[in-house]
Image (cartoon, rainbow, N blue to C red; front, side):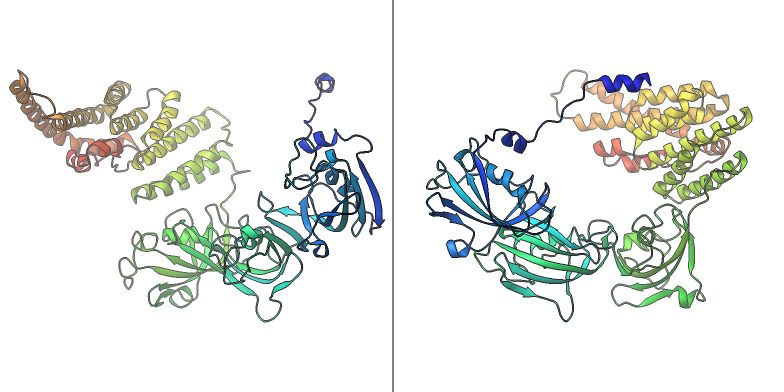
Length: 621
């Protein structure tokens, strides 16, 4: 209570007044007078955020018309549209418009400081305008309504007539069906599509004017709205030809339907097109997380539409069941299914590198083939929740996921493997061991998972992240030989040879059983360092003038080459021993290729050198 009382006693920070509020504060009595000429209807008056539509005629006190929106007084017949609280308006109308009813006609008598004679007026007029005179503004309030401002300059504004369903709105490259009619600002009909078939177009292909497309992009399925578009957004399109001189067009749109079309990669190669809507809300009811999926699908070649597999024919009518996140189907297939709703049917067009070029290819599918899948998601089951499970059951579930990750790693699917390990680590944030024995099992499993993630990062060339994961283990257990080995390998890949040497030396001291692995790693480290130095000397050779001792330096290079050969011979002798020790060193041993990002940037041939050195033989996971 003391805290609450103290907060109540603290001075409340006052909200800064808006620019319009500051302007209104300067109004003096008698500078703005209103005379009702025709009463309006209803009880509502415009409020902030409303779009007001009104005709305005400005006269001098002796009745001379200065300007008007009405055609009978020389205007274009197009009413003025403003958004209260957002559009720039003269002070007299800013104060007077919110007092009017719909259909009302009123005369506002304004002193100069209430119209364009105001100091720092946000609007400008021609030099011939009598802004120093007292004027009459005749206003007819035609309409006002809540409006959605689509463009910041108020060039595109939307009025909702009937709300739509759901929340999803069209975007590129969705396919749209809509009834569309159009009138000019003065009411002339220039387009009427209320019979036959709705207009069909592809979002983002300039098949409708830019402003209309922007407005439709804010609509939901079944919504009906009026979209007000000014001339700068009336771009050429097949839908309508807009004559020169038309300042704005009012489009009445009913969004009948849209087909979700997704560019999955952003480059137009992997396209998912929804053929039949599913049940639920997108994307909340999609199998975004790893799940057990049941699908029927038909696979065909894009070129000639030849069907080479159909679950309803070739699988005895049984659907395909598979666990997502395990690399059991082509990557493009799984990416698309994750964005489907139950009951949805989608047509997926897939490039070869996301289809069968990196996946076991059916015999009748040629290499490099683009394919199409017609997929029906029958349903899916989310993974088992760990809430309520005892510790043993939790560790069993963790072990299953970890083993799946190990399989994916061995298959070279490092991103998928990393995702599996990270999933368990996230779940471990909510696991609380109840005794020392459970705590030890939990801690060892978590360390192993962190090291597996480190191995994935190393494979993916993200050595710094690999080091971070190793540090998590070393901080808790400084003598963890596997973590020191993995971190040393990451440092060696980055070219931080001293850091790598320190880790391998520490590894020998921490665990005598790992001495052979550490020795082999130190030999490889020394050879790699010599190779890099030799390459550097070769790159700079000839850049400097010859100096005394150059011959002896060259001799030293020959000796380095000889020593390198000796190290290679010793390394080869230790290679088999290292492979043997690998399985003893880790219960999840996996062959490891070391990333070569640092070396590859400065030495393109480094990749072949790594293979020749045998650095892709063994690692610890």
